[in-house]
Structure formats: C-alpha cells, structure tokens
Length: 345
Length: 270
Image 1 (cartoon, rainbow over the protein chains, first blue to last red):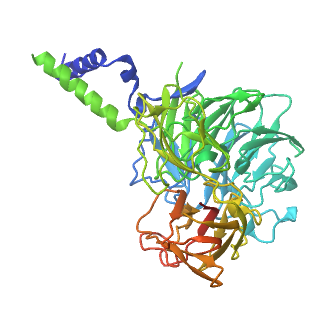
Image 2: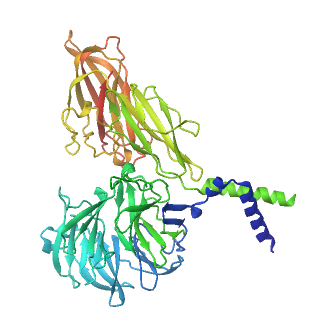
C-alpha cells in the first residue's frame, strides 16, 4: 500500500471512530441527501465540468435529454446558448449565439429524429431547430389571436409538443395565454389568459403534455404567481387546478408516473433564493420536496410549502435522465452550472 | 504514536470540512395574521425538516432596542406563542446537527394604544392606496410583501398625516410602522416631525421628532419607529405627523440620486 493511500484510509477510520453517528451525518454538500419518502437524492453541485472562461453561462433556464442520452442545457449567454453534456458532466459541444432571451427548451422526437423548440423572451419568438442548431421554423407573435398589437407584448416562455405534432406555446411573461398551432406552425386556437375565474392564469411560465394516463393525455400549465398548475384538455377546456401553496412552480416535467418541477422560490420568502424542487405522484399529490418542507396534507389539501435547506437559490427547471438522475438548472444564481442529483435507494 | 497523530489530524481536517461546507438551513416559516393587535396575537413557527429545532428569544422592551440573538440555550419552540404585552420582539432561528443554523428572523408586535377616531393622509401613489380610510389604524399589517393592501406607498417629497384621537389625552409616544425594502427602493424616511394641537392657542405645537440616516443597506423588514415627546404637556386630541421620504437615494444603492419610496401600514398612539 502506498503511503498516501494509507494515510487516507487511516484518517477515515479515525473519523468514524471519533465521531458520533449524528455528527457523521453532518457532511459536505456532496453527501447531503434531499427529499422525502422514496424520492430522495444525493446532491452533486460540481457535476458540470465546463470551463467558466471558455463556456460561460448566465441564467441556466432549461434542460432536456436527447435520444443519445446527452444532457442539453439552454442559457441566455450568447457566447454559447446551448451546452451539450454527457451524463457525467463532461462538456461535449456547444452551439447558438443568436438567442439573447433563450428561456424555454423542449425536445420532440419526430419520426425517430430529435428536434428542439426554443422560446426567446427578447426576440419574442419560438424557434424550431435540429438537435445541432440548424433553424427549421420561426414562429412570430401570434397576431391571429387578436390579443396583440406588437411583438413586444408577446414573451413566450415554454412550448409543449403533442404526439400529433401540435405545438402549444405559453406566453408566460406576456399575456398568459396558451396558443395551439399544428405541426406546420399554423394557428389553431388560444385559451387561458388573465382573469378572475379559475380557468385563467397568472404567469403561465410552463406547459407540458401529461401522458401518464395513456388514453387520455391532458395539458398541464403553470400558473406560477398563483402557486399552482392548471389542467386543460388538449383543445383547451379547463379541467381543474393542482394547488401547490407556497411554491412558485416552473414547468411540469413528466417522467414515468411522476411529475417533477423546479420551484423558483417560496412564497413566504420572496426574492431571497428560497427555491426547491417538488415531486408529485400519479394522482398529483406532492410526495417529496428536495430542499423543501416535508409535504403534509390536511383534508386533501397541501399545507403551505417552503424551502428548508439552502441547497438551491432559484431553481428554474429539472431534467430527469434515463437512469432517473435529476438535473437542476437555476436562474440568477451567480452563473452556477446545473447540479446533478442521484437517487438514493 | 505515529498512528495517533494520523488519527488526530485526520479527524481534525474532517471536522473543518464539516464546518465550512455544510448547507445552511432556511429561516423558519412564520405564520401570523398581523403584528398589530387589540388583546392578543398568535405567532406560529414551523419547520418541516426532520432533525431540526427552532429556538427563539423574546424581548418586551421598546422596539428600537436590540433583543438577544437565539441560541440552542434559548426557548425551544413547541407551540404557538401568544403575545399580549404592548411591545414584543421575537427572534427565531433553526438549528440542527446536520446543517448550518439558519438566519435569524425578527418580528416585532405592537398592541393597540389610544383609540384613534380618524387619520387623514396626503395622497399615496395610486398603485399602493392601502385598503380604505382605516388602513393606518385597522390593526392589520406587518406583512413584508409590498403588494399587501395593508401598505400605503408614497413617492411624494413629503407626507402629512393628521391623527384624531377619540378624546383629549396625554400622549406618551407615537409608533409609526414602516417597510424597509431597499432592493425595491423602499427606504425609511429621513425625518419624522410630530406636532400636537393646542386648543387654547388654536395651533399645532412641536411634540417630537426623529432624524434617520440611511447610511447602509439593511435587510428587508418591518421597522417600527417610536417617537417620544420633547414637551412636558403633551395633552391633545389631534396630532400632525410630517414625514420626509428620502429624496436622493444614497450612493451605495443602484438607484443613487433618485427618489425613494416610503411605505407605512400602521400608526399607534400611546
């Protein structure tokens, strides 16, 4: 045995002898386990191996995994709007310099080929590209809705693509409407928007297609300032609200039987880096909060949720890979690269 | 011997890495209806994270005086705290073995004083009008969210408030509750001047004042200012409060040189 190795092993042994079990738990961030029930994860804040000088980020807005297993990050840093990683955090490639307001990133597998949809807040457009960044289609502000007089009123934040190719766009920083197009980008209808009734939205920041009930897919739309998700039929009829008191939820992400979402911040501590991650089961009941309060239901309703551990600042999106690892991209968090969280058995 | 040294250095470095790299706990979750009350107020603290405990201190002195920082020797929080005395400041903090202790939250509560009949105010900004004529004496407030209807927000050079009491009484102090949220350009005012109405002379005579220097950034909070009389005879049924908001934001702030906001949610007369 080499001397260095010997020292390491001896000191570890010493530590375990001298420390009480409770102190042993008090470990470095890398050893911290977050979450509840069977959705618990070990956090790795140093997953990204990207060089901040070469491949910088500003806000890390969203992440997806492609069919090759690569993790794709969208940032509003125009030196490299898209950073492609492998699952170990190694940077594989970067592309994109013309998306100053890069915000929403959605992947759609169309007849076996991966395509990306980017929402750009500053350009007031939705752009469809190939997986390596070649532009295929650009959707301008939706005049057809009769809701807009100029592009600046339209600030798209997210897209969701249905199995038939229909494109749903949420104008989460504009008028909070959901616009449905066919696969060619032709306007079909719009719904949502602001108002007092339950079917309306406030800060419609994200959208996804909930495919957990195979025969009956529905749309889930974020109403972030109302701390909830709202369910609609694929043609825009309002179904119901999934109330998440206290949680400024970002887009819903479906993987397996679960719905995952970054929570930008806690309602009880606004604009003070009070974010966490929430996980809902197939019945849309919160089962785990990563760095957040243990979910408690009273009379079928969740109690107000909040951050408990300052592991994150402002989580903005989550991505769940094919090995059930979870990645967290953050907004306005000191140009931090994404974190990876591995499930704990 | 050699082995023993290795034992010790190993465990010391392990301890150091623990102390430096642990995540911090978030501040405790607080629940209360208002920090102003007639008979009593209830303060509930929560923290749904296994292995953590909330400790708190209370201080019954004037709100301007500092109260003690909570430690693991302070009161252990077990059930909602019922507040009854005229002024109470509660400080609370979360501790655990696994994580760094949280930041301290500090909340001051104030009991109703003399009965106020009416408060007339100069116009607040129409975005922050409050919730009607009784906004400043309805026992509702202490909500940090600046969009809460408990706040009246002013962006004028000066604010004038006339406070009418139900009867003529000797006034021992006046409390004004401000929001301090410098990130949102809401500052404490530079000056508060209070005068009381003298019926025999039929004019307002000076009562007391406070000069506030916004020297450095403070964390967002509700800030009670308590003003005492400089005069011997403070018997009156009417008070006039002049408030001078910050007209030029100080140099340390990104909004330097511009006009600040001033937010008020409650006035109490004792």
